[in-house]
Length: 237
Length: 237
Image 1: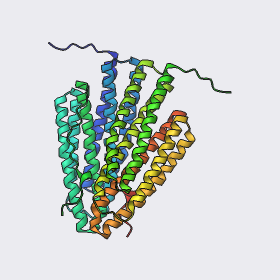
Image 2: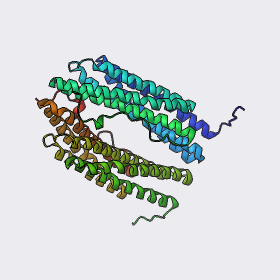
Image 3: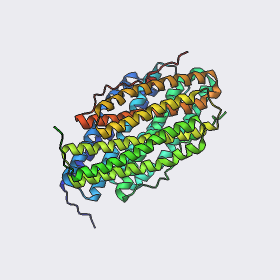
Image 4: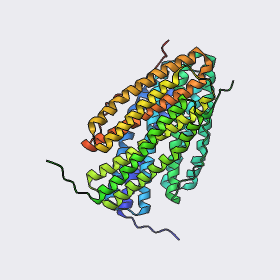
């Protein structure tokens, strides 16, 4: 039986907010890709562009929040509609944070262009960023289609990103021990890797909202948490 | 002329939410202090307690959000009241993040108890945490009293925390270059210092909400940003 659905004023409001979310998503995806490319290709102009573009992402988040609050105040939504609106605000919050991390990566990329390259780490970082960017694409896709299966898949993939981060963390320790002249550069690269790992957490947050929207409850807090470095006692030697 | 004020249903709702915020604030202040003490005194039991207590902070944030949304949906607040409710959600969001950073510090403190102490860094970290904890006390005080002057003072003090972080960052680089056996420990300590610096940013976020509540606009984005390490090219040598 096909679902019938009467378009209400609330639905129209929601669609308009979701359109803004998608626009934000597009900008954030570009920011991730460009920040990692700027690092890998030592492209200062691109890094500057990523930093400048973050303002647009922030502005969209503000407008999503204002719009959402306006809709809640005006439409007195039902419990289910309220849940949807709250999820919209969470998703835009996650996107804004990912944008911030991209900006921070671009900032450090600029510094790193002025230092000698450390082994072959930036392609690995770029691959990690790519994995997160693909996760984000799918998370937003799952969000628009209300597809909890795709969302669960995104949540699982975050473990791979965490593993990439762990591998990089060990590499950086090794390079630093090998040659003290690598230390400053590796500190920056490590922060970059950590920022990408955190982006993955925020993408997971978006995917969790999809599950919440469809099922009414957040996935149990047993999602794979594979960043073990805060427990790491010694480097592999 | 004394201000007259008729207590409305909205005011009562707001008071109840603000009481929850204050409770959260108390827990978060304790988390900051205890995490830094656990690190400094190598107290694993205390570190475990900080990690376990974070759940209570998260739960309070959820209840603040649910309550706020319920009030918006039920009371159809005026523009000014709406602004107040939105600020309540932002403040609880900031508190929750500070709690998370404390938890993360406690996690790393546990690891560090199993390593040999690196020079005399943990007292400096503890002082930095203390500065942030005092800022938080004042920010919450400013929030309850709607005191923009005190809030502005908190915002200015964040620059001191950033400077403490910069000094620690340089120290860690020096210790790592001095002796590669310090590298792993310094990486953890550096993350701890960075987490405290980020806590300061979130306290600043709370203080900014006070300014927003009273004046209707956020302070101009010219607040002192004194973490210069993402621009730092070389360590002092």
